[in-house]
Image (cartoon, rainbow, N blue to C red; front, side, top):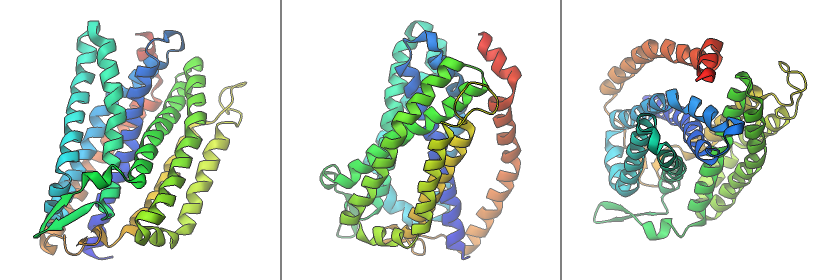
Length: 346
């Protein structure tokens, strides 16, 4: 494997981890807003219980993405920064607003509902804007004049391909978050909240799958080079579909821990994460060697090999230090019943 492939694999790994964690995080904020007036189900309390310790951790990975992009592909960063100046600035502004209001929601109980609505709405807008980066890299919406690249917003926001991605982002955000909240509710023995989020997952899941099919349909018309590349990885796409079916079936299986309760949400969460991994692998491999089609490749945007090796060692050391902390955080947050019972009594 070449240095360029190792670097882009690290970057894509950060993007995948952030995509999964962020969609669950953003969706939890939205569900907290939706069920804020239905206290009898405890659905909002469950969402807030998940949201409170995770949004800080999630933001770590978006920083890692930016640092890795700038470090490994400095020549590509200039073009990406120029093209994504407007959508990137809007995303950063919304992230700042959402983070601020998540903090204020706990410090100003009088305005808790208003702040919950603001964080919930921004939690849906951010994934829609973030995923817009992907169709932009397909090359149809970038115009280069006198060596200066600029984004054609008129083409972008009149493209069915763009709206297919936006619909997929919103549906996936709601689907992944409802699945994880169902699993969290199940483990915390919140039966009513579990039934609410299981129902939501069953409703939103098929919509997310339909939007993924629309992406492929519109991609065939607007980015044929990428569509043909993904067809070369058809077995990965088929495996992705199989994992989606496994997740759906898991929500109907009898629970192994709770008699009379239907659904195995932990299996469903694992299957859906695998589904998105298989699909993203096919997409990423088909996208290579282009970072922005057809002008920027991983070779043309790559840093000096000596710089890469030094950075690679730094990332390895960093992960050795941080990984045990992430494992401890997961066990404390999702599996420690003392934590769950303590939060449940508040």
